[in-house]
Amino acid sequence: MKYNILVVDDDRFVHMYIENVIETEHHDYRIISAYNGKEACEIASQEEVDLIIMDWEMPVMNGIEALEQLKSDPKTNDIPVIIITSSGNLQTAFDAGAIDFIRKPIDQVELLVRVKSTLSMFKLIKNIVKQTEILEQQSFELEQKNQTLKVEQEKSDTLLQNILPAEIAEQLKNKGSVDAKTYKTVSVLFTDFKGFTQISEKLTPQQIIVELSIFFAKFDEIIGGHFIEKIKTIGDSYMCVGGLPLRNKSNPIDTVLAGLEMQDFVTKLNEEKLAKGEVAWNLRLGIHTGKVIAGVIGKKKFAYDIWGDTVNTASRMESAGEVGKVNISGETFKHIEEYFDCEYRGKIVAKNKGEIDMYFVHGLKPDFAEPGSIIYPNKDFRSILSEY
Image (cartoon, rainbow, N blue to C red; front, top):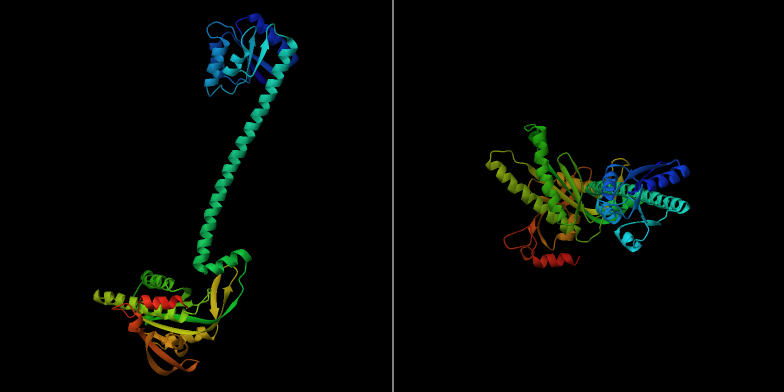
């Protein structure tokens, strides 16, 4: 590596002496000459200079004035300066920014030692600064990557939690798998739209998606307020379940309340549709309470699902129901009869299930409902629910 050394002195013999000593000893040193402080500042700001050896006493601009200007200029403030002096106060030179000094008359050995030590020190400092800058850049890039990864991780987590219940998603992240669990008492709710095939024949695929999205988005909102977990949609069918993955005893009540809200929403929306001359979407809804097994299936596309006779029976409750009604099984009725106004339908034949006791739920009993409502619980009933 070739070092550029700027020698500043108004005495040409000093220039010749320094140049001869340094270049004779080291061919890697290139001497640049200046004869006053002003000229030195101009050269230093225009050329690459590694070291300045500068006399204190000079015309036009002396060494201290030149030092102060060099240190005030961002282009030159990191260039090390050795001051040559015969009588000046060294503290003044150091305060102005000098890194070292040489007394006159200049000793050859001292000159070489101070030049070598100063260049070695600043070479080390430059390397440290350069490494620090590289590390800072790498640290910044790493932080950016980490931030990007964090954003992507949050997106993945959000997507996973949209697909799976939060507790199940967390277990899948931590363990890489989810253990199947048995739940002794859950309430499964099914809906579908009667005459969907005929309705779909009158609409474009895009219109069908828009219409179903309106209904299902509202259903999602409703069950979210009742501690109910959405399982899936299949075509025009919507399936959800209360009482898992977090177990609770209130799930038959929660699910019936959600079912009443769903039917109320569909009824009001259909009134608007009919007023505008549009086709009504008629909803059937069924609920059954019993035991299920729940778990995650699939390796590439995860799906949280439930299995068991309870699921099949809930599906039969929906298909055996009537438009605008909440149809429940006798098993669900046992859990809710104290609080809801129900109509016994008798033993109804269900496909592959035989005869099943079924009930229509018309709404909450007056003592448990908000004034003027049959689907929204009052303060007293909410207090009862909190004890479950």
